[in-house]
Image 1 (tube, rainbow, N blue to C red):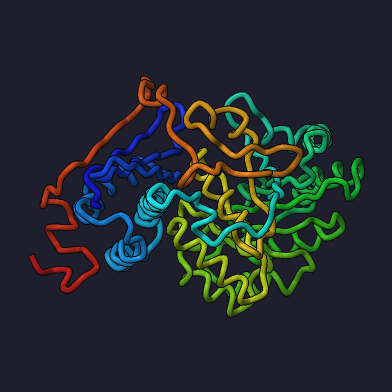
Image 2: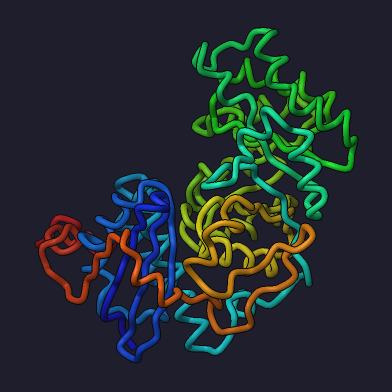
Length: 401
């Protein structure tokens, strides 16, 4: 069996998403996905990755992963390169499942649980305005989530407050403003609604410690990426300064990036994104590494329906699951327009994934008819991409022609 074609699709309506199809010579097709700056990833897949991937046996997932990792390591194994590898890896696992007749979670070792608890990240998208509501109507948003069975929400009211001083300093007035959604939700619902703080790396250590200490009175479930992840020692300092658990971080890449975090005890909850850090292959290893250090794992899940499905399979499988991130603004709006078989969130849980082989989702026929598609395809090795011109295959001399 070999790979004979690679298709990729961007959508103008959903400009963060990139979906790929990897075709084999026996008619089996695997789906993959990544997100963020998809135009760059799409170009890399067709102008470099395709020359290496075409002709390969898709069943050799570890070999393909290692080849790309070695090819990418002189660029730091992050960013565009790792998002491309993530989408490819996810598609290869879909193919593997279809070959074996097993759903992904079975290939990973079966189920560790029958249901997966979810939390809602309060992104606003299309008609959904959850992001504005956690600032202006936090009690009503929390009530609505509780009525749907979701009792954990993640918000980021401090992000926009970092702009005035570039995250270097927070005034008392700004602090009060950032704490207000937590105060209102906790005073209204007490412990019925648990809240996590997302920080998107906007603050320095001094400001982050001040925020965390003020936030302790509202007993948040965790703090995530309040500071940039480029210095683990800073994260250790923040963790020692607060009683709030620290989640870290989808901004790390591959198991090698998580090694220092774990060795230095920089976090309490390990977070990684299958669409950014190397796909199913790598996230499974990161979750297992977290287990070695006695820590729970929570996948980052702010992408499209294929990523959502992959994360559900992983969450059913791994023994050290914390909970699964979901975005109702996404799954209530456009997931079903793109694929069939998306795992459902019901009363705060995902109760199952498709038992069809592989991921269990397929692109709808209507998807291919969309007027906003930006489609590229590769069917043969061109011999003039970076992968051929400089032999960037992860094997031997990268400068040998």
